[in-house]
Structures are given as C-alpha cells and as structure tokens.
Amino acid sequence: MNKPGPSKFSVQAFATDDLIWDKILETLSQKEREEADKSESEINEPYMGGKEIIVRRKDKTNIAFASLSETNDNNDKWAVYREK
Image 1 (cartoon, one colour):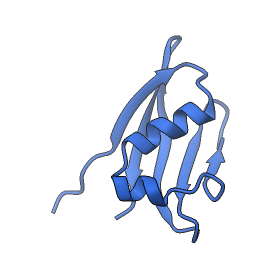
Image 2 (cartoon, helix red, strand yellow):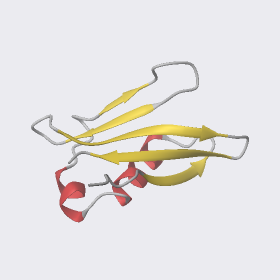
Image 3 (cartoon, one colour):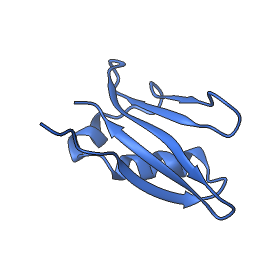
Image 4 (cartoon, one colour):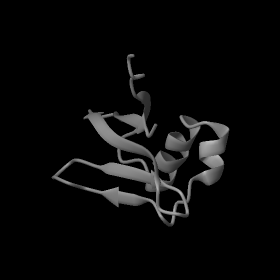
C-alpha cells in the first residue's frame, strides 16, 4: 500500500509563523483542524535557514509535521506530512 505524499503550500518569503500555521491547518481535515493546539505545537530551526513545525493536540500527540522544503527570493515552499 502506498502512503500518500505530503501536502504542499507556498507563502511569501519571511512569512510570519501565524500565517504559516494557518496554511498548515488548511491542509488538514476538519477534525484535525479542530484538534490542533498551537500552544502544544512546536517550531524548530534545526539548522541555519531550516524550519520545522510539529502540529499537536492538547494531549501532545502529533497531528502533522511541516517542513520548509524550498526557498527562493520571493517565496518559501512547505511540505506537510500527516500522522496516520
């Protein structure tokens, strides 16, 4: 059985974390959006220029993992991997 690929979206370069959060939520199901808790979620910068966001529920279980996949002068491309 093949796993579905990541959902993808683009935002303007240097977009705010709030805008990125909103775009991530748009890729999730209605139930996942309702369960997502921003205060329990985590933003990491594992290396210079890299950014990752772990979307979690109130009980700290993971819903999705988003990572900055490509950047250029005008926009940043993100990939969102949902937990199964």
